[in-house]
Image (cartoon, rainbow, N blue to C red; front, side):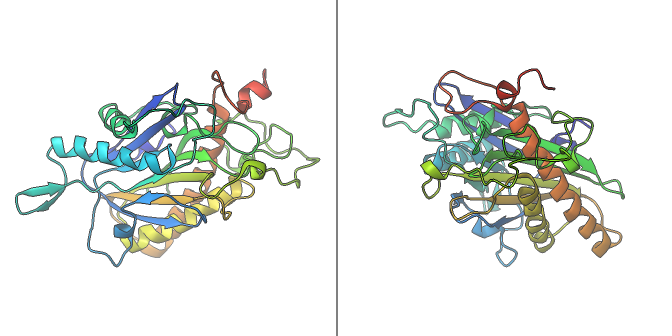
Length: 332
Protein backbone atom coordinates (compact mmCIF):
# COMPACT_ATOMS: atom_id res chain seq x y z
CA UNK A 1 0.00 0.00 0.00
CA UNK A 2 1.44 3.36 -1.10
CA UNK A 3 -1.25 5.38 0.72
CA UNK A 4 -2.42 6.62 -2.69
CA UNK A 5 -5.65 6.16 -4.64
CA UNK A 6 -3.65 3.93 -7.01
CA UNK A 7 -3.60 1.28 -4.29
CA UNK A 8 -6.95 0.40 -5.87
CA UNK A 9 -5.80 -2.13 -8.50
CA UNK A 10 -6.27 -0.99 -12.07
CA UNK A 11 -5.97 2.78 -11.53
CA UNK A 12 -3.32 5.26 -12.62
CA UNK A 13 -2.93 8.99 -11.93
CA UNK A 14 -1.06 11.59 -13.94
CA UNK A 15 -0.14 15.19 -13.12
CA UNK A 16 0.90 18.10 -15.29
CA UNK A 17 1.50 21.68 -14.23
CA UNK A 18 2.93 24.99 -15.37
CA UNK A 19 4.79 26.67 -12.51
CA UNK A 20 4.71 30.08 -14.23
CA UNK A 21 0.96 29.73 -14.61
CA UNK A 22 0.64 28.36 -11.05
CA UNK A 23 -1.95 25.89 -12.25
CA UNK A 24 -2.22 22.33 -13.46
CA UNK A 25 -4.23 19.21 -14.19
CA UNK A 26 -4.64 15.79 -12.58
CA UNK A 27 -6.20 12.82 -14.38
CA UNK A 28 -7.36 9.48 -12.97
CA UNK A 29 -7.35 6.72 -15.59
CA UNK A 30 -8.71 3.20 -15.04
CA UNK A 31 -7.07 0.42 -17.04
CA UNK A 32 -10.55 -0.40 -18.35
CA UNK A 33 -13.74 1.66 -18.49
CA UNK A 34 -15.17 1.94 -14.98
CA UNK A 35 -18.52 2.70 -13.35
CA UNK A 36 -18.80 6.14 -11.76
CA UNK A 37 -21.18 8.61 -10.16
CA UNK A 38 -20.94 12.05 -8.54
CA UNK A 39 -22.28 14.17 -5.69
CA UNK A 40 -22.09 17.98 -5.78
CA UNK A 41 -22.82 19.82 -2.50
CA UNK A 42 -20.99 23.11 -3.04
CA UNK A 43 -22.90 26.14 -4.25
CA UNK A 44 -20.58 27.13 -7.10
CA UNK A 45 -19.41 24.08 -9.08
CA UNK A 46 -17.70 24.01 -12.47
CA UNK A 47 -18.08 20.71 -14.29
CA UNK A 48 -18.20 18.81 -17.57
CA UNK A 49 -20.27 15.70 -18.34
CA UNK A 50 -21.37 15.13 -14.75
CA UNK A 51 -25.07 14.66 -15.59
CA UNK A 52 -24.34 11.36 -17.35
CA UNK A 53 -23.04 10.01 -14.02
CA UNK A 54 -26.45 10.15 -12.38
CA UNK A 55 -27.94 6.67 -11.92
CA UNK A 56 -30.93 7.32 -14.19
CA UNK A 57 -28.83 8.10 -17.28
CA UNK A 58 -27.69 5.59 -19.89
CA UNK A 59 -23.90 5.89 -19.85
CA UNK A 60 -22.68 3.02 -17.72
CA UNK A 61 -18.93 3.58 -17.60
CA UNK A 62 -16.33 6.31 -18.07
CA UNK A 63 -12.74 6.34 -19.36
CA UNK A 64 -11.13 8.97 -17.12
CA UNK A 65 -11.85 11.63 -14.51
CA UNK A 66 -10.17 15.03 -14.61
CA UNK A 67 -9.47 17.58 -11.86
CA UNK A 68 -8.15 20.90 -13.14
CA UNK A 69 -7.22 24.41 -12.14
CA UNK A 70 -8.09 27.34 -14.36
CA UNK A 71 -11.74 27.89 -13.48
CA UNK A 72 -13.93 27.49 -16.60
CA UNK A 73 -10.85 27.64 -18.82
CA UNK A 74 -9.69 24.43 -17.13
CA UNK A 75 -12.60 22.46 -18.54
CA UNK A 76 -10.54 22.24 -21.75
CA UNK A 77 -8.23 19.83 -19.90
CA UNK A 78 -10.85 17.12 -20.41
CA UNK A 79 -10.70 17.76 -24.19
CA UNK A 80 -6.98 17.05 -24.13
CA UNK A 81 -7.48 13.87 -22.11
CA UNK A 82 -10.30 12.82 -24.42
CA UNK A 83 -8.11 13.31 -27.49
CA UNK A 84 -5.33 11.26 -25.94
CA UNK A 85 -7.70 8.43 -25.03
CA UNK A 86 -9.22 8.46 -28.53
CA UNK A 87 -5.72 8.04 -29.97
CA UNK A 88 -5.40 4.92 -27.78
CA UNK A 89 -8.62 3.52 -29.25
CA UNK A 90 -10.58 3.92 -26.02
CA UNK A 91 -14.13 5.16 -25.65
CA UNK A 92 -17.83 4.35 -25.73
CA UNK A 93 -18.52 2.43 -28.94
CA UNK A 94 -21.25 3.71 -31.25
CA UNK A 95 -20.95 1.60 -34.38
CA UNK A 96 -17.40 2.08 -35.68
CA UNK A 97 -17.00 5.33 -33.71
CA UNK A 98 -15.58 5.57 -30.20
CA UNK A 99 -16.21 8.47 -27.83
CA UNK A 100 -14.12 8.59 -24.64
CA UNK A 101 -16.25 9.74 -21.70
CA UNK A 102 -14.25 12.11 -19.49
CA UNK A 103 -16.18 13.92 -16.74
CA UNK A 104 -14.26 16.82 -15.19
CA UNK A 105 -14.36 19.36 -12.39
CA UNK A 106 -12.43 22.61 -12.02
CA UNK A 107 -11.24 24.92 -9.26
CA UNK A 108 -10.62 28.67 -9.33
CA UNK A 109 -6.90 29.56 -9.16
CA UNK A 110 -6.82 32.63 -11.43
CA UNK A 111 -5.79 35.08 -8.66
CA UNK A 112 -2.99 33.13 -7.00
CA UNK A 113 0.03 35.10 -8.27
CA UNK A 114 0.60 33.09 -11.45
CA UNK A 115 0.92 34.55 -14.94
CA UNK A 116 -2.46 33.90 -16.57
CA UNK A 117 -1.76 35.98 -19.70
CA UNK A 118 -1.77 33.00 -22.08
CA UNK A 119 -3.24 34.92 -25.01
CA UNK A 120 -5.53 33.12 -27.44
CA UNK A 121 -4.20 29.62 -26.73
CA UNK A 122 -5.83 28.00 -23.72
CA UNK A 123 -3.07 25.87 -22.10
CA UNK A 124 -5.32 23.36 -20.38
CA UNK A 125 -5.95 20.95 -23.26
CA UNK A 126 -2.19 20.47 -23.62
CA UNK A 127 -1.82 20.05 -19.85
CA UNK A 128 -4.57 17.41 -19.95
CA UNK A 129 -2.76 15.40 -22.61
CA UNK A 130 0.50 15.74 -20.68
CA UNK A 131 -1.15 14.54 -17.48
CA UNK A 132 -2.62 11.52 -19.29
CA UNK A 133 0.76 10.65 -20.80
CA UNK A 134 2.40 10.75 -17.35
CA UNK A 135 -0.19 8.53 -15.63
CA UNK A 136 1.27 5.85 -13.37
CA UNK A 137 0.88 4.19 -10.00
CA UNK A 138 2.98 6.80 -8.18
CA UNK A 139 2.54 10.56 -8.39
CA UNK A 140 3.44 13.72 -6.50
CA UNK A 141 1.27 15.32 -3.81
CA UNK A 142 1.08 18.91 -2.58
CA UNK A 143 2.03 21.59 -5.10
CA UNK A 144 1.45 19.41 -8.12
CA UNK A 145 -1.16 18.75 -10.80
CA UNK A 146 -4.54 20.32 -10.08
CA UNK A 147 -3.24 21.37 -6.67
CA UNK A 148 -0.37 23.49 -8.05
CA UNK A 149 -2.06 26.83 -7.46
CA UNK A 150 -4.63 25.86 -4.85
CA UNK A 151 -5.13 27.84 -1.64
CA UNK A 152 -7.19 27.66 1.55
CA UNK A 153 -8.18 30.40 3.98
CA UNK A 154 -4.87 30.18 5.85
CA UNK A 155 -2.26 28.25 3.82
CA UNK A 156 -1.56 26.94 0.36
CA UNK A 157 -3.76 24.06 -0.65
CA UNK A 158 -2.63 21.24 -2.87
CA UNK A 159 -3.18 17.74 -4.17
CA UNK A 160 -3.73 14.97 -1.64
CA UNK A 161 -4.33 11.24 -1.63
CA UNK A 162 -4.78 8.41 0.87
CA UNK A 163 -6.02 4.81 0.97
CA UNK A 164 -7.22 2.04 3.27
CA UNK A 165 -8.39 -1.55 3.12
CA UNK A 166 -11.92 -2.71 3.94
CA UNK A 167 -12.53 -5.72 6.15
CA UNK A 168 -13.42 -7.85 3.09
CA UNK A 169 -10.06 -7.08 1.45
CA UNK A 170 -11.29 -4.44 -1.00
CA UNK A 171 -9.38 -1.16 -1.20
CA UNK A 172 -10.71 2.38 -1.04
CA UNK A 173 -8.71 5.45 -1.99
CA UNK A 174 -9.18 9.20 -2.28
CA UNK A 175 -7.67 11.86 -4.53
CA UNK A 176 -8.42 15.53 -3.88
CA UNK A 177 -7.45 19.03 -5.00
CA UNK A 178 -7.94 21.35 -2.02
CA UNK A 179 -8.77 24.97 -2.86
CA UNK A 180 -11.28 25.58 -0.08
CA UNK A 181 -12.89 28.79 1.14
CA UNK A 182 -12.31 27.50 4.66
CA UNK A 183 -9.30 26.16 6.52
CA UNK A 184 -7.83 22.68 7.01
CA UNK A 185 -6.21 23.67 10.31
CA UNK A 186 -7.55 24.71 13.71
CA UNK A 187 -7.38 28.46 14.29
CA UNK A 188 -3.78 29.69 14.24
CA UNK A 189 -2.39 26.30 15.27
CA UNK A 190 -0.63 23.70 13.10
CA UNK A 191 -3.22 21.07 14.04
CA UNK A 192 -5.35 19.60 11.28
CA UNK A 193 -9.09 19.13 11.69
CA UNK A 194 -8.58 15.65 10.19
CA UNK A 195 -6.24 14.59 13.02
CA UNK A 196 -8.53 11.88 14.48
CA UNK A 197 -8.23 9.92 11.23
CA UNK A 198 -4.46 10.24 10.71
CA UNK A 199 -2.42 7.08 10.12
CA UNK A 200 1.31 6.67 10.71
CA UNK A 201 2.03 10.39 11.05
CA UNK A 202 1.07 11.02 7.43
CA UNK A 203 0.48 14.74 8.01
CA UNK A 204 2.80 15.49 10.90
CA UNK A 205 1.50 13.29 13.70
CA UNK A 206 0.44 16.31 15.75
CA UNK A 207 -2.92 14.98 16.89
CA UNK A 208 -5.47 17.39 18.34
CA UNK A 209 -4.51 19.86 21.09
CA UNK A 210 -6.08 19.37 24.51
CA UNK A 211 -7.08 23.00 24.26
CA UNK A 212 -7.24 25.00 21.03
CA UNK A 213 -7.68 28.73 21.63
CA UNK A 214 -9.30 30.37 18.65
CA UNK A 215 -10.34 27.09 17.01
CA UNK A 216 -13.93 28.31 16.90
CA UNK A 217 -12.91 31.40 14.90
CA UNK A 218 -14.11 31.08 11.31
CA UNK A 219 -11.20 31.55 8.90
CA UNK A 220 -12.24 31.97 5.25
CA UNK A 221 -11.09 33.67 2.06
CA UNK A 222 -14.25 35.78 2.26
CA UNK A 223 -12.48 39.13 1.95
CA UNK A 224 -11.54 38.18 -1.61
CA UNK A 225 -14.43 35.81 -2.23
CA UNK A 226 -16.43 35.65 -5.43
CA UNK A 227 -18.77 32.99 -6.83
CA UNK A 228 -16.75 30.04 -8.11
CA UNK A 229 -13.54 31.19 -6.43
CA UNK A 230 -13.20 28.25 -4.04
CA UNK A 231 -13.59 24.55 -4.49
CA UNK A 232 -12.54 21.18 -3.15
CA UNK A 233 -12.82 18.61 -5.92
CA UNK A 234 -12.11 14.97 -5.23
CA UNK A 235 -12.42 11.36 -6.27
CA UNK A 236 -13.08 8.31 -4.14
CA UNK A 237 -12.36 4.98 -5.82
CA UNK A 238 -12.70 1.32 -4.88
CA UNK A 239 -12.43 -2.14 -6.39
CA UNK A 240 -15.63 -3.16 -4.59
CA UNK A 241 -18.29 -3.96 -7.21
CA UNK A 242 -20.74 -1.06 -6.84
CA UNK A 243 -23.31 0.08 -9.38
CA UNK A 244 -24.07 3.75 -10.16
CA UNK A 245 -26.72 4.05 -7.44
CA UNK A 246 -24.38 2.64 -4.79
CA UNK A 247 -21.57 4.88 -6.04
CA UNK A 248 -23.87 7.90 -5.75
CA UNK A 249 -24.41 7.03 -2.09
CA UNK A 250 -20.66 6.49 -1.65
CA UNK A 251 -19.97 9.96 -3.07
CA UNK A 252 -22.54 11.51 -0.73
CA UNK A 253 -21.02 9.80 2.32
CA UNK A 254 -17.53 10.86 1.25
CA UNK A 255 -18.59 14.50 1.61
CA UNK A 256 -18.50 13.86 5.37
CA UNK A 257 -14.74 13.75 4.91
CA UNK A 258 -14.81 17.31 3.58
CA UNK A 259 -16.82 18.47 6.59
CA UNK A 260 -14.40 16.77 9.01
CA UNK A 261 -11.25 18.17 7.39
CA UNK A 262 -12.30 21.67 6.27
CA UNK A 263 -14.14 24.31 8.27
CA UNK A 264 -16.39 25.64 6.93
CA UNK A 265 -17.15 23.48 3.90
CA UNK A 266 -19.97 23.20 1.33
CA UNK A 267 -20.51 26.95 1.33
CA UNK A 268 -22.30 28.99 -1.33
CA UNK A 269 -18.88 30.00 -2.68
CA UNK A 270 -17.37 26.50 -2.81
CA UNK A 271 -17.85 24.08 -5.72
CA UNK A 272 -17.40 21.04 -3.49
CA UNK A 273 -17.74 17.83 -5.51
CA UNK A 274 -16.92 14.14 -5.12
CA UNK A 275 -16.65 11.66 -7.99
CA UNK A 276 -17.02 8.00 -6.97
CA UNK A 277 -15.58 5.23 -9.16
CA UNK A 278 -15.51 1.44 -9.03
CA UNK A 279 -13.36 -0.98 -11.00
CA UNK A 280 -15.74 -3.76 -9.92
CA UNK A 281 -13.08 -6.39 -9.24
CA UNK A 282 -14.23 -7.45 -5.74
CA UNK A 283 -17.78 -8.87 -5.59
CA UNK A 284 -20.18 -7.85 -2.83
CA UNK A 285 -21.01 -10.60 -0.37
CA UNK A 286 -23.02 -8.71 2.25
CA UNK A 287 -24.23 -5.70 0.28
CA UNK A 288 -25.67 -3.48 3.01
CA UNK A 289 -22.90 -4.01 5.56
CA UNK A 290 -20.12 -3.65 3.02
CA UNK A 291 -21.50 -0.51 1.38
CA UNK A 292 -21.98 1.18 4.76
CA UNK A 293 -18.42 0.28 5.77
CA UNK A 294 -17.14 1.58 2.43
CA UNK A 295 -18.94 4.91 2.89
CA UNK A 296 -17.65 5.43 6.41
CA UNK A 297 -14.10 4.54 5.44
CA UNK A 298 -14.32 6.73 2.34
CA UNK A 299 -15.08 9.77 4.50
CA UNK A 300 -12.08 9.04 6.73
CA UNK A 301 -9.75 8.45 3.77
CA UNK A 302 -10.91 11.71 2.15
CA UNK A 303 -10.24 13.63 5.38
CA UNK A 304 -6.72 12.25 5.45
CA UNK A 305 -6.16 13.11 1.79
CA UNK A 306 -7.24 16.72 2.40
CA UNK A 307 -4.82 17.14 5.30
CA UNK A 308 -2.01 15.52 3.30
CA UNK A 309 -2.63 17.99 0.46
CA UNK A 310 -2.05 21.00 2.71
CA UNK A 311 0.78 19.35 4.65
CA UNK A 312 2.66 18.45 1.44
CA UNK A 313 2.36 21.86 -0.26
CA UNK A 314 5.66 23.63 -0.92
CA UNK A 315 6.48 27.35 -1.34
CA UNK A 316 7.06 28.85 -4.77
CA UNK A 317 7.98 32.33 -6.03
CA UNK A 318 5.02 34.71 -6.18
CA UNK A 319 2.81 32.80 -3.74
CA UNK A 320 0.00 34.78 -2.14
CA UNK A 321 -0.10 32.50 0.94
CA UNK A 322 2.56 30.55 2.84
CA UNK A 323 2.75 26.77 2.75
CA UNK A 324 1.96 24.95 6.00
CA UNK A 325 5.53 23.63 6.12
CA UNK A 326 6.89 27.16 5.63
CA UNK A 327 4.77 28.68 8.40
CA UNK A 328 5.48 25.90 10.87
CA UNK A 329 9.11 25.31 9.87
CA UNK A 330 10.92 22.65 11.82
CA UNK A 331 7.78 20.62 12.53
CA UNK A 332 7.44 17.17 10.90
